[in-house]
Amino acid sequence: MITLSDRVEIGLVVYPGVQEAAVLGLTDLFQLANRLAAERSPDALRLRVSHWQWQDASQTVIRSFDSEPGPGHGPAMVILPPTLGDPIAREAAAPYADWLRARHAAGATLGSVCAGAFVLAETGLLSGRAATTHWAYRDALAMRFPDIALDADKLVIDDGDIITAGGYMAWTDLGLKLVDRVLGPTVMMDTARFMLVDPPGREQRFYSPFAPRLNHGDEAILKVQHWLQARGARDVTLATMAEQAALEERTFLRRFRNATGLKPTEYCQHLRVGKAREILQATTRSIDQIAWDVGYDDPGSFRKVFARITGLAPGDYRRRFGAGRAALPGGDRAEAVARLEQ
Image (cartoon, rainbow, N blue to C red; front, side, top):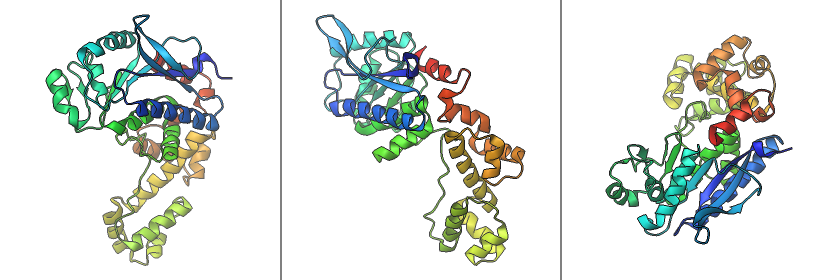
């Protein structure tokens, strides 16, 4: 049964001139991620989505929408979506800036998309920090807030407790990044695939799946790549790969590396580790068994290869990204919640 402690609230700020399509789109993205996470694990964390806007009657920022009404400590993450018009004026942003500073002081992570950076900058929290915005607003933001380390060439800048994204549609990148943080990369990838959008592009190596180079134009090598993929790179030798390519071994080695950027052994390791990552994320199978399943006779060798490629030991990878991590004993779930809600 999902309880209050299983929810991480993400608040979307509905400020004057906000792009309503982005507000609704982010709401849908997070709701979709919830559904996909629940399909993988009924006990998975949930994202609680809320909208916040200024109310003249109470002279404060209030919830105007809540996907899961009930008590709470306020949003663990606050997003300022983009605007379709001119950047917000200082006077209009002031009430939101006060509220945002209070949320940040309470432990919330703040994020902005496109011209939402102007609202965020009014808090003073971007002073001396790296940030991005839409290229069309770059000069205006730099002139109004010259103390920001602005880099409008980057689509997303994740500075821990503050994340900024540029471009009208970069709300998808920011939204997927938050799904990745809370629900894990598997759910993030599921969400991206369902929405037919590209996942965030600048992740640490333990987030990034192996993407083999397939558009190199060498048909013989491509044939071997497809063959390796179909058999999971299990029980293969240099001789059998060269035979599949109908090439002499020395020629095969040279052409394979030129085409893929990897030696055949390295390529097979990446394929096996990629399969192991999927199993670690989706099952509770033992690491030794997974090593056997993906073609390693020696679990110790598997662990070394896995850590070298992903940057994490298999057990650490499972604790960080496994779909069943919320059901595991210990502090994994509490740690995930505390990271955003403390």
